[in-house]
Length: 285
Image 1: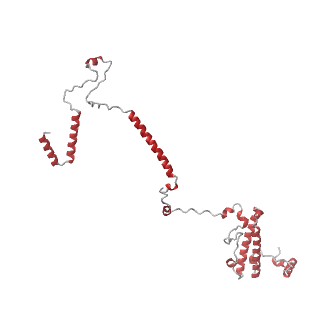
Image 2: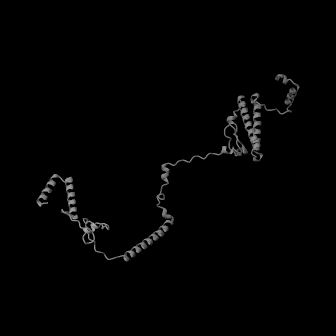
């Protein structure tokens, strides 16, 4: 393979150099920015790249180009942006202006500045492509949790129900149900009164208190021996006691006295108990 010096000496290379010197052939932009050693030419290639970017950004605004064409245009624009950055770095190395700091800002079709100088960017219709639209949707901010003070600000008379009657609906309903309940109560009272008057009877004589010491025995049908021992009167057999049996009233009085003595022994002083005992002795109790 021939060396570069030999290639430069070929007839085609000499012919092209002659045409470039006469200005008949358009000069080609170097593939690498580091190959350019002249500041005016580096400025020229940077302006050419900006012109190409502007044309492609105008083309990508058309959403009818199709998804694949739009994606290709967006890729080309990002490639040109990276190349422009290389030329700006080379211009700075050649002691030219720092376009990264003082250069014009790049705007999208909505007039918004394209954020940052790094990373992949989307322009025009590429922002509405499937899978890209979600990247630009902002997540809703989480709802702020209310503090106790914020909750207390919403507590007023209506919270406690003091304004429930202001709407003019509750009072008529309450009056209606109150009237209905009152009517039902009056009807119930009248019905109870009529039933009480109709079923009223003469007061009967109070029944004598049944003796708790009376013994009642059932009358067996099969035992003939018990039939002979019973008296002629029908009913219960009178219990015959061989020792004195106190009555019910006497038993109750004895229980009361016993309870009093227990209370006196528990709560009364010794002096009071002695006086009480002396009094009972005098009375013969």
